[in-house]
Amino acid sequence: MDYQATLDYIYSFVDYGLKSRYKYSPETFDLTRMRTLLARLGDPQRRLASVHVAGTKGKGSVAAMTASILHRAGYRTGLYTSPHLHDFCERIQLDGNPISSESLAGLTSGLRPMFDSLPGVTTFEITTALAHEWFARQKADFAVFEVGLGGRLDATNVLYPNVCAITSISYDHIQLLGRTLPEIAEEKAGIIKPGVPVVSAPQKPEVMEKISFIAKERGARLSVVGRDWSVERDGFSLARQRFAIWNGESPRREFDIPLLGPHQVENASVAVAIIEEIRGQGFEISDEALHDGLASVNWPGRFEVVQRGDKTIILDCAHNRDSTARLVATMREMFPGARPMLIFGSSDDKDVSGMLAELLPLANRVIVARADHPRASNPEQLLEAIRANAVALSANLAHTVSQAVADAMQDSEPVVLITGSIFLVAEARAEIHSVTTPHAESKS
Image (cartoon, rainbow, N blue to C red; front, side, top):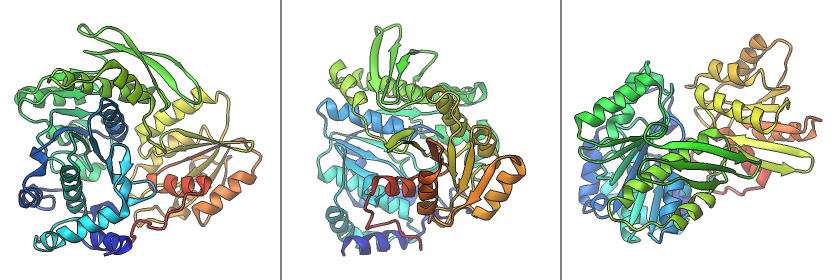
């Protein structure tokens, strides 16, 4: 199979990432299938050290930071994340480099008989198995796995990790994970394993109560940023920010990160706490590796600032109300007094009214666009919602993301904010950076 045929094959199975409505249950997400797949591969997940990261927001950033530090420490490090921005191969990385399209095609072709023989197997299960097998074949020392959805029933939850981590939990996928924060937290905390240390970001009290209960029940030592780790943000610019972190056993240390916003300091602090747990298990990771790994992490589309002529463009994948509120706070901090042009589009299973409540008071004008993805919201309905909630705000419809970007570049407003979904940001980023994406995600 060539690369496009490989993608067509992978997406020919049930892909819940392209659906907005389905049943989230042990019958739909049967971990027995994932365990069967890995058993047929010789259980590669048992042959390497690993970190498992769940959460509503920030889990990708924490995973990328942790992998970057481990790589800088000299460990051959895999990173498994989803979804991708521009190309499917981004999901499976080794030492910061995506698997090549040729390698993915060859790996998939070789394992195809096994996939075909397993009734009900899903796209995400196949992709997760491919990641495990690729890391094993490449003799990775460590792998960092980001949960796809929830945690308890996620295909990644067959790991035997060295450390588990839970990033900030807020309302998202409520029709699947639960309509209260404790219900959502219970699903996320489903990754906690007996006796395996767990690191948590700061959480709302009712969320922390649920995480603490599950950790105690499973005999997992819990370390919490903001409680067990003290953090202080020391300064920021449009290029990077600085923070200090310490606890009773670790002296105050300062780090630089290229990811912006107070929430990324929180995420970086979780990554540092993860590394300290790994250090405590006998792995050698120098302070220099910690500094270099955080300073060099690459995680685009997260308050990514791009200069194009006299325009400052911010690309951010915020897609629920909590992450949008953090985005707006970072915008006000970085661009005080600015009224940016907003390019907005969302997936149809998201809290659009909540996101707009945060974004509309910030914006000068809105252009609504629909990403080329099955879950993208109807742009006419988004436009109606915007005009109903911000009567005085200029709001227009662009038929494509490309047209929206072109319209924004011709406007007199110097600051442009593009947000609402990862799919929208990916298309806009490709347009702005002239990224060639010959192997776009299948939309079938």
